[in-house]
Length: 125
Image (cartoon, rainbow, N blue to C red; front, side, top):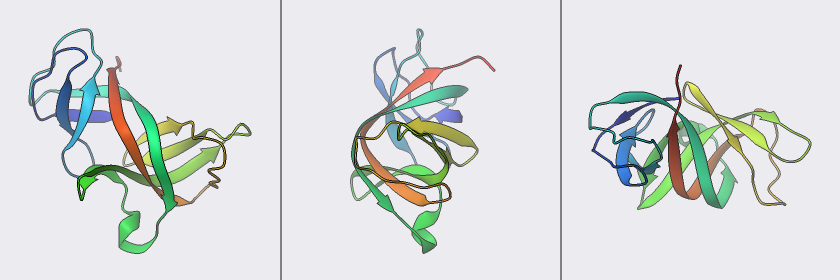
């Protein structure tokens, strides 16, 4: 997934980023600092999911943003593995999610996840 940094951050520090949707906070896990305006390809780690809910209609638009003070990730389930791990299509990117047992999702389902935090790891493309 390609993101744009909206603020500067040191490794392990929090910054604001943007992809599809509005600005949102994430922890920058690069080995070097990142500067505002930099675009970079990243792998995303979604930490401590507070909730997963099915959505439809206008709420089904994919993206990452802060809504009513809560970090939200919206997308469509593109693949579900036998162990419960699933791939979530978020805009042009895909994120693997390992939910707690009991969260049942199916391929094609539009969902909204509220994670505690997001960590971004830069990758070479």
